[in-house]
Image (cartoon, rainbow, N blue to C red; front, side, top):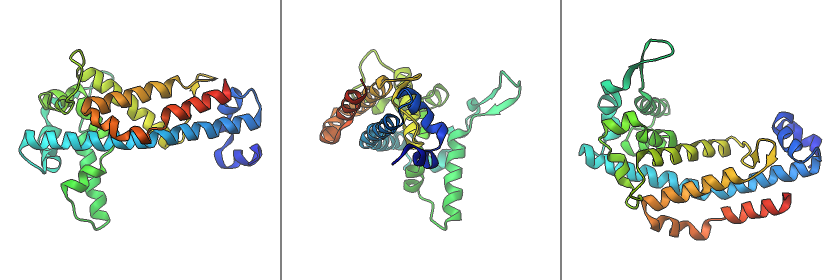
Length: 237
């Protein structure tokens, strides 16, 4: 594809960063764009496994904690509406409610009703974003849940805790969003650099290992990230 045609489909602003990094060589810019896509593609199996494993592990843990397999629906008026989630916004001085989890569940329920589908806990669980599960490790929800979320990590190093887990999950979540929106993951400012992708790769492996080392062994033969990054580096170094 010629660069001019590519700008029609990908837009000049989206391609500009690649063009700058390629020192205004249009064909090199398109090669870099493709390399970015290939590295992003390589992350999908890992990201998918992480999201499913995290979600199901947390669901099992919280089902036990509440003695309720339907906790995700019933806790809308439980911990998701806890008084501790109401606070005074320092910027506006107004009372604010952090009902992100509750609102997310209700949004799913409304969508299922609109589509004429039955509402079940299984469907609601599968419909939640990675941000929903990551938010369980934010300090406000974590305290209300008496630290139960951290218990899904059977192999967490002794010196690690909620903050280390939360930090990695948030970085992974933001990275995942970049991939989903076809944003570049191959830059450091205006320079071609895959350090960001390599850092996230390590964080994903950490989370999977901390849940269960068997997960990284399971995905090992499908894990093409290091090869894809190495190949991209060899083209542009």
